[in-house]
Image (tube, rainbow, N blue to C red; front, side, top):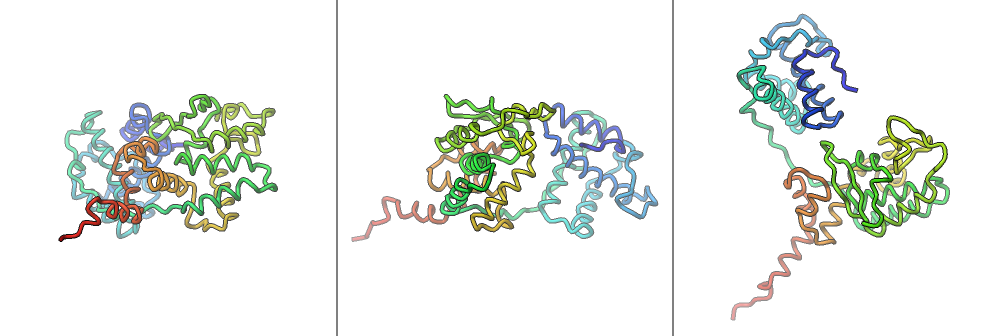
Length: 331
């Protein structure tokens, strides 16, 4: 739920535009709202427009467009400094908030033309150190699947095995997995449709392991008493014990439980790490083209996918060894 009651009208207009026209997810728009609420609170404090001592109690509804138009690039720099020093925000958090501010002022100056000048036009983003994704080895992945399949004490073992199988074979996001409907799966074509970031639809091809796991689960999936609700639970592939569409939290708990049973560190691995694992294993063992991997994972930018080309030093070594000149000797 996005709390817009205490926002100025121009901020709510921006949020509505992101939802309706940019097709941003409610989660993304809620993050925009939080980022910009903090930004506007800081600007009221920065310009001496409030006597409120508690930062989180500063009201922004009365921060007018005229006051907004007074903001300059140096004021935004002061906000970023506040984030780093007072809030101890890291480069990634600062970069996200700067991105939000850029999008916000672009909307105000170009789309809605509420403002004439854009103080965020030349903002720089803090340099980020790219971290290699953490992922399971092939052996650990096989152990995880094996333990999930043979656990006779787990009354949901078919469901949980199918969840782990789809994560490790298809590289799904958590939101994509919980959103799968039975009708999204085309068994004859061996593929399914998922809704990714920005409500973008894409097709994912299913291998034999996925098809078998889904069919085994459908054989035991509850057919009676499934809720007909706003989540379209009656159409959902995966159901909770309450016969509703499974929640993200429940899936996270399922993955944590299965990781623990397999003897894997739950502080290091999560549902998103299973997505990393699928991408890494496909790149390492499947000779997958980077563009094909980009489409499979639903990445908007190829640069996001390229991180998987750096995770495997063995592949780099093999590439050098396979050079036809590797055995050349000068006579």
